[in-house]
Length: 377
Image (tube, rainbow, N blue to C red; front, top):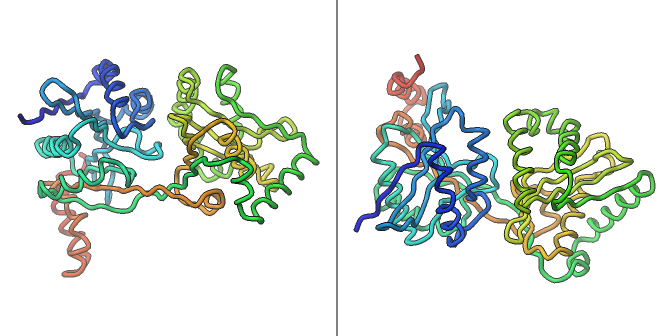
């Protein structure tokens, strides 16, 4: 019997499927925080107003076996409107994925076939930062090849992570001498010249007050000056405030903070899910930059992980050098772009080939000719 795909395009309807979604995720081999119904719902609340919801559920008879939490958004490519399908929350999450419960290859084939049936609604499908070790990767590659779909696959984030093994003392002795010396000097200097207060918040207190300190640090950070702070976007500010409240109620929140002379100097906004620390946001106050509070708070976080029975610290993001001083492991990700052959944006896939056989201006002219109808009135 062929699998059936059902669409959820109404947010109220998506809210109603929470019990089913939660059970599917609990039973799924790719259970991750960024597929939690609460996470998806919260993201949509703050960022979904100019987008179209397109959540797909796959059914085998009367049993739900997979889901794709998609949305459609208007994006600009070469100044033209491009209807892009993405996974909800993938712009903020450390990674994204499909919710797969059973028969992943057949379920993914049903999802891809359904998307091709409604290809008049989209130009590109972007699947960003799927974990390379996810049960999704090989089945979706085989599915795309088997259905003759035009797609591209590119490396995604190389995200450092630390498995918590052995004792803190063993781990710390195994770190390089230069790192141990640097941290020791920074701690001594901070303690000698300032009143140093270190905080690990796990719930049960005044989360609003603590988030006020987080935003104070953000306002005095290099990210604020560069326009990349969570304060730079009011929607993102409200999202993280709401996420802190939600995570505090659910026991997921971990706020790690360092204060110097009573002033917040650095913070880490973490989620603890299934004994894994997920590092979502971090920043430090530039006024204390000479003391390297960002390094001290990372030291504090890892020591906390060893002492509190954490299994893994997921630093997220890319493999920046300051993270790689604390671990030798990285988690690979894959980015997929699926092209609609009926869309003018198929030229994005053909562009490298066309570059070889003709002037780039021919490509540009052809693109503009095919895409003229896509321009806004």
